[in-house]
Figure 1: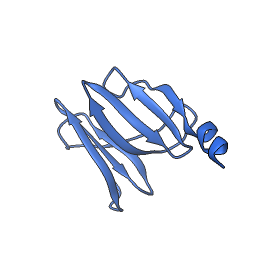
Figure 2: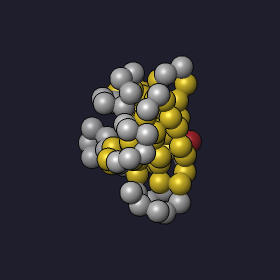
Figure 3: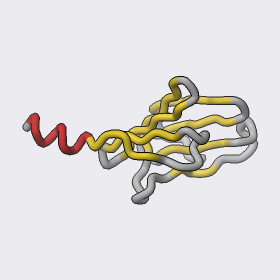
Figure 4: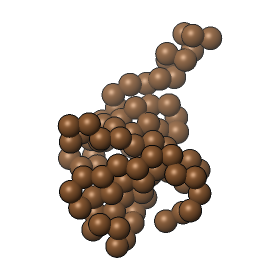
Amino acid sequence: MPFDDVTSLAYTTNTIFVAFYDSGLYVSRNNGLSWNVVVGPFGEMFNNVGIVDNVIYVFSSILWLYYSNDNGYTWNKLVDWTYEIYILI
């Protein structure tokens, strides 16, 4: 696991998610004994993570918001912020 700037941390029972500014999202499913990198469906990095009502939300490096209902095994795109940013410019 990298040791650069941590942007966010979230956890559920036996599962810990840590997001790093430059290195993306890592998950441990055994209370921190081992770690694996988590990437998006298009290979993008996840830079922020949060959990609300057992739903995991992540913000990707290409400005997409994803959510997972299965503890981070699969990800669904919720919002494409690039469209919103272009409208504001």
